[in-house]
Length: 193
Image 1 (cartoon, rainbow, N blue to C red):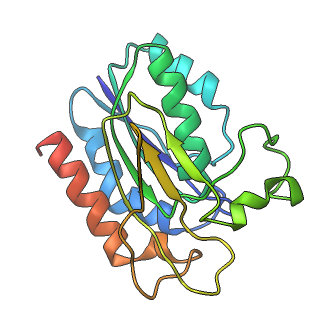
Image 2 (image 1 turned 60 degrees about the vertical axis):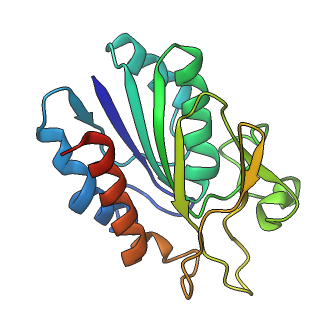
């Protein structure tokens, strides 16, 4: 069985309409109607990922696909993938929208304060994608004066930036047509449906 997780960003909650909710409604949720595919609802970036990974392993999930935005992409998706891989669950596809670095040592009840300054400096650090993750794709914005910007990624020893969505800001890139097209095409490609 394959399980799909959708993870929201820093300021997003499950109670509001967001780009991630729209992506879920239009492009992700429809796979829940297929045999051997389980689609989870959108989760906040600071969910209990170790517990969620353990539940997936106990449920007999073989593969997990992760679609995530902002801190959900730069922190939540990475913690979830790391834990899933440790438990023997494969993570063949991760689709990221403007992933923002967040130190793993910073408690989730704290925002990106002075100790998390690297969240505001995308050239200072790279988000390390766990080695066992398969395909990593996504988009990022690079508006000159935005405080939060997508960080560089590091995967299997390679550092790289995701492609830019010109004119998008961090606060609205998860609502961009480019993001929706990417989510749709990657899920179709992965599931072959």
